[in-house]
Length: 143
Image (cartoon, rainbow, N blue to C red; front, side, top):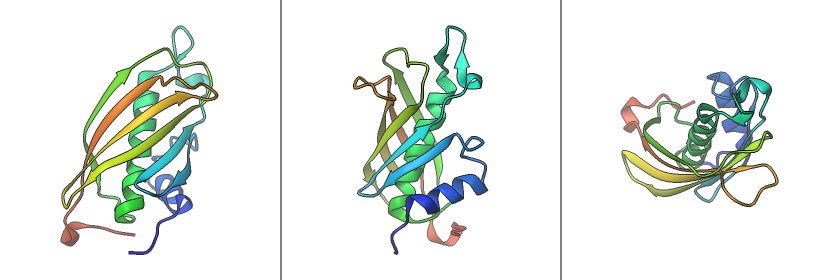
């Protein structure tokens, strides 16, 4: 399989409207990992001016999807089967970035974790575990 680039994943996210209107950027990809950034706008804040939980979950899911596609290729039908998030501290009212790491990639399932940070902060705001279902080759609609 040829190496997939962050730009190719970004294009796929855009094509399938998974880039949240251009707010999510894949910054790096490779080595069973990905780094993604969510450009936070006022519409992503909840009362109290903190980044909303759904925004954090969306970023974690996209970052894990990117890490997985970096390993298996552009397979749009790979889907989330489980996502568990632990909110650790209030995110600052600024961009959030995600560090995704695959722990295991099997034939049908992939498991990974994502740590989320407010831009410029060293302590994480959330920790996420994810499981993805990988379609069998005969059911893939690779790009």
